[in-house]
Image (cartoon, rainbow over all chains, first blue to last red; front, side, top):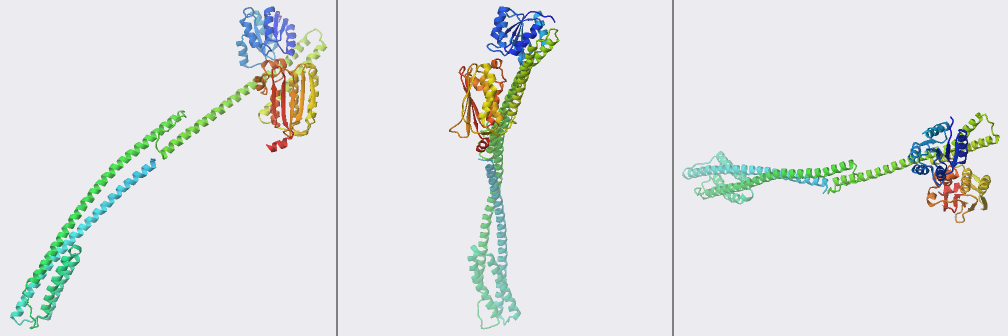
Length: 124
Length: 509
């Protein structure tokens, strides 16, 4: 699968962030990173990434609130967001979708599956 | 009045009426017998009187004839004739005596008068017979007065007897009439009273039973606040109503208890679900690194480009440390689960807590370099030996120290330990930091499992959120307590108080 575009990875865990940066780069993406929800919103405004991979447990502004604010913002509301979280129950999935996320993926990440989800949302 | 009293009273009343009826019946029947006897008496007396009168008349005629014969002829009386005459007179005498036996009480006076005159008359006649053959005997037997006198008195007695008999008959007739009347009245009164009492009792019990029925229906349909309090019976029915009310009270309490137990069970079940969701979340975080790095390394090895050996080694280290983190997390969860199911046991031995604190500090020192914190142990006094669970004590100290280091940056961590002067046999351990501290709300939840000060804490600082829950459970298991004082931005002070000897503590408890 040949992919390109800019991905914003919002992740506060250093290990996970490094791992995802390397894997996404290898897959062909330009990767931007943010450590919390507030940074993520700023970068979405300034860099207009193709897609956002959003962890939910984040300091300062958590992923749910950040997703809600992004979707309410007319400048960046069109950018698709995939929730990326270790909260794996149906309730959490629904909560993420209700917060405005376009899709949902659980940790540990099924990377090929995640790439398919990203591809689908970018092509829309 | 109670139902039993009412029933007893009714029964007694009816029995009394019944007894009156029976009594009057016997009275009447006695009066009838009396009447019969009196009648028979008067008939016998009348017969006797007539007979006596006849006998006297005959005897008088015989004496007159004999007297005339004696005066005019030389007639002599044979012995047998004398004997016959004496027998006849004796018979009369016996008849009169028999009449006397019938005349008692009111007619006695009349009889005595008769007896006097008849005795004289009969004596005269006997004398006449006995001296009949004696020519010198002179007696005028023509005088009719003694005979008339006897007959008159006999008739008087007869009349008197007839009068008394009729008078008594009258009285007896009236008695019979009276007893008959009483019997009839008593009979109807019994029927009337029985009917009224029966009606009253039936309607009374019916009324009370209807109320009881209504009460049971209301209580049965779930209205446990309903009270059967409109029954004025102080006896069995009142007791029954009170028992019903008591039952509904107990039922209400029981249902309240059941609801409470159900709520508690629901809450426990919800807590378990949350716990499971949290466990899943906490396990997934290190697993994400392990799986992610492994897959990535596999992908990179598949590439033609040469492998950066140093990078490769570092990534393997990451995988290993994540694995270690996962293992310690699983151990923590198992410990906590053991504690919660009450299966965690103490393994007591003799140890000195100061040694364990020093070892824990040594383990912490490489981490201290990362955070730039200074650890001060100067306030650890000489401590007495403990008889307690050394492993659990070590874990409490390790958890508290690593927590203090985790939430403090370029600050001071101080550990103090000393015996409590006013509480012999107890030692107080204090771990104090100058870190981020906690709000009151956070303090309230900080010892709960999987709770860190807030949801972003684990993101910022890592950790399972189980450490303090385990500390609290272990402290309590070892007979002690753990408390925390803290303010946001002003650091935290965790104080663990433990007994030195678990044997004496258990004995004291």
